Length: 462
Ligand code: AMP
Ligand code: ZN
Image (tube, rainbow, N blue to C red; front, side, top):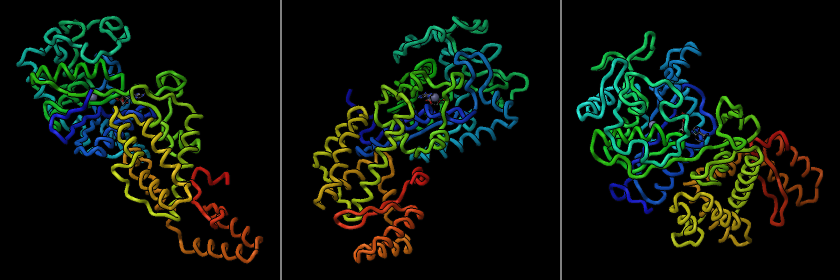
């Protein structure tokens, strides 16, 4: 399916953001890595992108089908904190992790609690149009008024998620599948607002309809989330937005398959629930995790295992080392538009963001780095730095940092080169050890001494 944005040259993207009641696990982070690569790829291809991500700090209840308490309420009681303070804390932690992964900040990061008036206005519109009704315990969407409800995204629905199969049907609903737009406040609810239907709080689905349309308009280009959002979340968003506006809501839906640990969805209850901090504590660079996720399509998801992470780390180390070495003798040449390797890279990302294929093109650029020809090395560097605008591995920043030597390190290297030149190998070995203590690895090649900065996760071993 060719991609045609609503306005030529511009793309509006809405990413369903996190519910900030806890740490995000690496599966959640994977969803944002996918979103980041989509944004970077479209920018690379020349589009002007407006990226919006929400922060769910109210409204997401424990069960997906209107039963249970608000996740923020439960967490606030668990941690004895004010829900907004809790949301702030987990939002900050989320952004620390995102930045470690080189995930770019969206242009708009929008909190549900700051958009309650827009949600109320949207619910009023739905009531006016006959798509919603007020009941004793809140306002519900009347799914019978929206033909095709629940079938638009071809979600494979696990049976227990169908209303009525698992939970007792709420007698306030006209139809068991009707979903809450607004919930009347329960005694002790920490987050509640005034509304035409009394005090209460908004449903999770209405948040995303209201905030996406507020920032991107009633019809926009791309809306993303993980596979679990197909139903009910995104089917509900479609019913709400299209019910209220009568216009198409989203032109392209993108759902990433899950990151799986031992072939199971990563869930807290099942153990194997990892955070980025775990990856770091095993001695890996967060960017190795980023590189790992680039190896498959978002349509397949990621099978996460330590071995896979280790090989991604080895690949990242190899790239960094070769790039760093090449940079000592060559400057990057601007990547030519007609370069065959670059063309393959562009074709790959323009083909449904095929990052696995794009990595194969990158390996051909890496191979150029060891060429005896300076021009090849310059081309390889230029290509890699250019592609890295999409990969986001920070290669150029890494080598800039790795090639900026302190004066005293430079002096030690010069002294060592001089010692070797006069055949004083004992002194030269001493200096090699001294440099290693300072975090630099020295190699002797035919063209003379080469050095690289030892990556932080390797310092202990060397
Ligand atoms: P939540 O905070 O639960 O709303 O989830 C944040 C995002 O992570 C959503 O887009 C989810 O669909 C996505 N997600 C949750 N679990 C996984 C997983 N194991 N792999 C990939 N994405 C996930
Ligand atoms: Zn959402």
